[in-house]
Length: 148
Figure 1 (tube, rainbow, N blue to C red):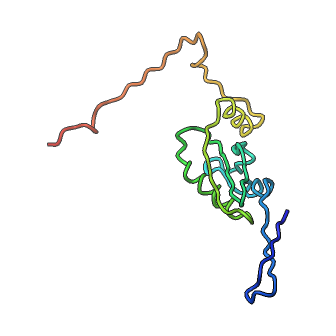
Figure 2 (spheres, one colour):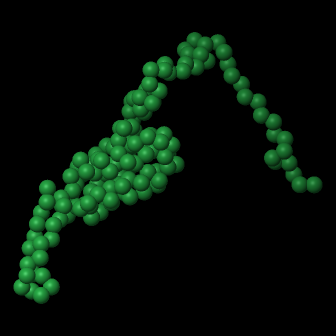
Figure 3 (spheres, rainbow, N blue to C red):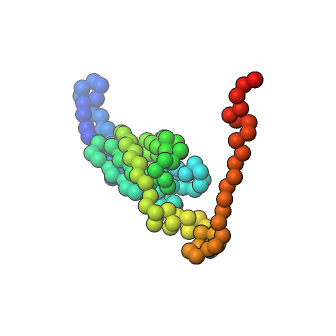
């Protein structure tokens, strides 16, 4: 969809047409499909990480992206990649990226989609009723030794 406006040209008598492209959600989602998750290395759109896309008046775009965990160390990288990709869409005048966190169910679905048909690994020691106990023993040598 385009919007055309006419105004006076540089000499005042010849009208000049300015064409402004209206931003579409499809165009924004196509741009987001080029953004790979930095750890999984797959498009965030394929991973179900795009929560919402909102297009405001004047070409402002707001994108909400799910992170897999709240303390995601790659949050700044994801934010920058999304901003760069959406900024490249014709007609976009501004990008606001909001981060949210996946629920446990969403994380399970993501893990299952990445795993494919391979069954989830089972930890036998974590089963209810297991009589096995795991003990960790650490030595205090070296790191805290006092100087000579």
